[in-house]
Length: 428
Image (tube, rainbow, N blue to C red; front, side):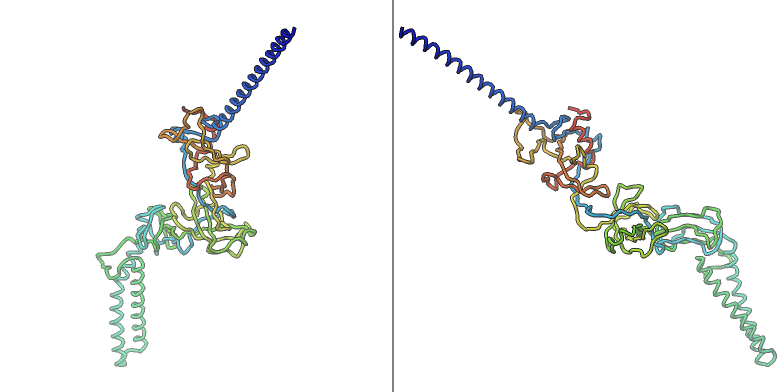
């Protein structure tokens, strides 16, 4: 009886041991399954980037970049801290523009300039003809004979007066006539010189029929008022010449903004009809009265640097800097707004960067991450905080540090973001 009891107790203990082993095995197996699942999720999260599948890395082919005219650049330093906007117009001062007129009326025979023609001082821009020109030369030649006759008459009256034969009055009249003829000759001499005719070269066989119209200053022809065959007189300009190298900028500034302006202040401006380029100017004078009914005060500026493409009368939009403080800025086309945040795209090596833990390791199941090739380039989406924006640029501050010399997408960022989010097609 004792042996049977012992046998039954051992058999019961064996069953309990077997059940315990099954439970332990099941628990271990479940733990391993969860570990594997958790690891897979983390791995997938770390390498979720890729072409058109979310993440922070976008990879574009050379054909894609060319099709959108993608442009790379760097961060720039721009004065965008505080500005005043103003409209205005380019203007050449009256002291640097000239109306070209003829000293005498006549008919235009030749016209040698057009709008935009560059001319030098004293260059001939047109010729005019008129019978009066010949008449003046004829009179100048004839005045010599009149003076010779007046001199002879003076001598004759002097001789008669000495012998008490003639009256003193006749001598005085002869002297007066001689003086008149000398004055007329001097007047004709100067008139011919003003007409561009050399009085000493005038002969009966060399009478000039054309009068040259010359430019009083060097510059660019801005208007041509005459045409071939038209009649012009001394009060009608033939053309106008301006010296664009002396361009000024006249701004219209409201009264409330005047306290912030001072002589020497820097101005950035763009052409209203061509805002692709920015020019510089500086204030040299501030008006002391309102202009017309606009309730604005004129502010005068000199244009600095290259003036190519600028002409008198162009309308402009200006930004007046209130502080000489530079900010790190990018072109507006470099910024993409999404979900209430702003981003730029930085050229990268193809890895997604964890800026919080600086962990750049890990591969997707042993697959080597892509790098730049001749036909493909990688861009990382980086969050930035936007600041002041003006003249096509916006100040930005990266949420995480980025080298200032880093290459960034300055044009085409919207398309790069579309590739990253999968809203456009891709070529693999």
